[in-house]
Image (cartoon, rainbow, N blue to C red; front, top):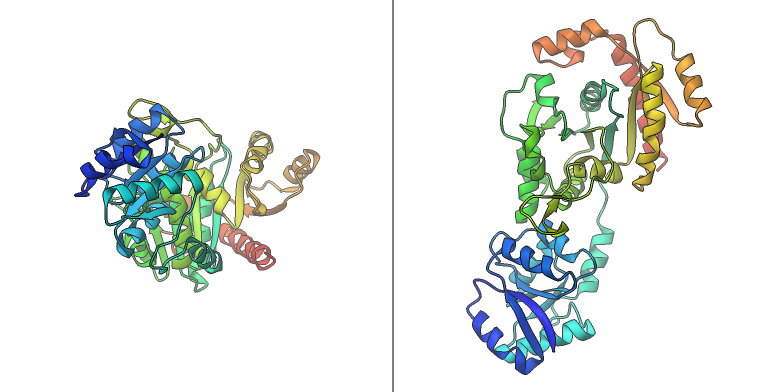
Length: 407
């Protein structure tokens, strides 16, 4: 007998499926009423197959991703193409069509579990292989730039804002995303008074299957011209709203919606483990660093921000290996913020002596310009168009364009 967890709430034939399961060689160990109950049931046995419909209350792509962890078998039940499409949006790829009788349906489920005859409708209208080929052929679209820096290296958010503004002023549709789950400050720096988080809204749309280029653009605030801003979490305790699978969908959609996406991420990128929200195992856990990790791994290029003082340089040197350990394959450019009249020579020598052989772009720090921009809730280019910082940002955009052109 094959033992399963069944989540078919809302399906009129759910009781008949349970009753006919033994005849098909299946034992229904648990009948789950909603997504939370399903997660709890799955946590008791990490290998037990799950059979569900797309109408399970509170089901989402993030929950499906957690259920699929560890190569668990998850099979969707669909009555037609619309149900199958909903399941695919949720992330379920193994789909069995509901047959004329409950017993024949459960026999089809048993065959799917035992033999993996997956993805073929008896009508021949859909095959899993066709969908996978179509997904691979989809164009990548725009470029993603992740702006990161180790703790204690202020200037990351300022660089991200100025960089996104520079892209937009060059005529590119640009989205600036505040994905810092420790100290979100993009809205504050720009003087935007809005308690609504565009990034949280986008993640919720990803969870319910309504995220697309249009909905992502509507989630963002238009700052000027072609510059859009996707605000971060309004309070740091809202970080569980930014889930791994939803964030991954947001970055993919951002490629299609904008020419350039600049993501300001927090300094912490280590795998801090699953933080349990409702009790139970890792199925019920969230990770605070998911925003930074997903942004860095999805980025086409990473801008690592640091200052030209020994402490900041040492923190960058010790922090960069953690970036590469994430599996980040994108090139890394160092934005070196120069304070006062300091020259970049000593800092460059310190980087080279530490074995860091990356392209470095000096960015002069304009304290007066930044103070004026912050006081007015404006962009640096608006209050100090001749700021030396902007010359450094122009050099950075040129370096980024050169790097991305070779990828």
